Structure formats: C-alpha cells, structure tokens
Image (cartoon, rainbow, N blue to C red; front, side, top):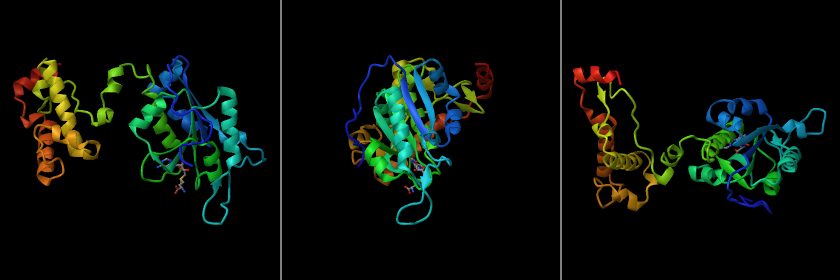
Length: 294
Ligand code: SAM
C-alpha cells in the first residue's frame, strides 16, 4: 500500500526546538556518513539542528553471516532484502527516538521526489530512511512499515544510499536555521513553481561579457522586475511543464494562445539566450580594465 502504513502521524507540523532526527538504515553506513561529513549539512549536525545517524542493517541480523538478503520466491535473478532485519532496525530506532513521523523507502517505483515533498518532510520531527539494495525489499515490509516511497528519477541505481542522500540534502536545507540566509531558500528554482533567474558575480565584465546593466543600476524595483521576468522566461524555455496556463500567458512577450506554439518557443529561446549573453554587447576594453578590480 502506498504512503499509508497504519497508525502514524502524517505530515505533523512542528515548531522546531529539538533537532530534526534522520536515521538512515543501510548496509553501507560509512558511505552515508562520509557524504554527510562536509558542508552545510555537516555544520547543521555540529550545531545541533540536525541529528542524522547511519544505522548498519547488519547489526539487526541474527545469523552468524549477518545476512540481509535471500533468494526471491518464484525464482528469477538477484536477491531480495529480508524484511526482519529492516523491521528490527526501524523498531530499534523508534524505541530510542520515539515514533517516526515518516518511514521512507527509496525505490524507483516510488512517487517522484520533488521540492514540494522536501518541504513537506522538512516540517517533520523524525524521519527514518531505508536504503534498498539488490532487487529491492520484501513487499511485506513495505506494506507493514513504510509510509512513503520515493524515487529520485526514472533510472535505476545500485542502491538507495545516493537517493537517500539526495533526499536528506534537499530536506535538511529547508529546516529553519540550516541555511544561514533564509531568503536564499525561499527564492530559488521550484519555489513558486518557477526556475531561478540567472546569477552573476564580480567582475562586472568577464572575458568581454557584461553583466546585464539593470543589475548594476541600483534600482531594486527594476532588478526585481527583471529577475521575475527572467524566472518566467527561463521556466517557459526549459521547463514549460512547471507553468500553469495562466502563468505561461502572463509573460508580456508571450502570445495569448499560450506557450506551446513553435513561434512562442522560438521567441522564448531567443529572448532567454540574449538575456543569458548579457545583452550580447562586447564590452569596451577600457571599461573591462577598470571593472576587473571590483
Ligand atoms: N528491482 C528494482 C526495480 O526494478 O524497481 C530495482 C532495485 S535497485 C537495483 C536497488 C535499490 O536501489 C532499490 O531498492 C532502491 O532502494 C535504490 N534505487 C535505485 N534506483 C532508485 C531511484 N531512481 N530512486 C530511489 N531509489 C532507487
């Protein structure tokens, strides 16, 4: 059954005082630990905003070979992950931490993981993430224990560790306080259903290419208007599937007929490409020299 294991609070909103806990059940705990030992997530762990632990699935086996997999009933290639060690791992984590808000299985058969799903999970207190291997996990474990199944895309990886790390990274940066500047999380690709606008930094002229002049103008209202138009154009050009019909039509250079005609698409590509090229004007050399010191 999808996303509905019995008796669990779903999407419990919280005001965060305690760290968000994420327990990753895996046969490769070092792989997970090492990926979480650098950068923003590592700093959030050190400062106590996130408490993330990799749990070695083999610790929850009871045979001398510490086996986590077995042959598939009905025959066929590969091995299947046994349900009992995973169930024990979940129960041990819940005995230690309290009931999980969500028990997540990474699987190519799951719902597509999106920014909206990351946002939903970032409002929860306690997550458990299960990493599959081999041919996947015994279905009965999924039915009994899993609340959410997520895929990170339409391709098959060898294991759930990289998908789990993708999910954790996307969720972690939305936990309040993890990313220093809250605005950088609020205004970026997929927030508000749009891709982000192009970004530029110093120097103002680089290898003959100028930054769009509006960004140097100091007119905040103009800059906001330019950025918002760029976001819309970029989204229309690259990901029109993200736009509603109203949003696609709202752009001043878009025909009322919508975004799907080839004329529209050509125009959007050309406008965006011009914008991307910083208006396409080669910089004058003396200006380039003076701006390089910025
Ligand atoms: N037999 C499975 C199928 O066809 O659906 C694929 C198993 S895959 C080789 C092994 C494990 O990698 C899965 O159980 C899952 O945990 C993880 N995995 C692979 N691709 C994934 C994806 N696109 N998204 C999330 N998890 C994935």
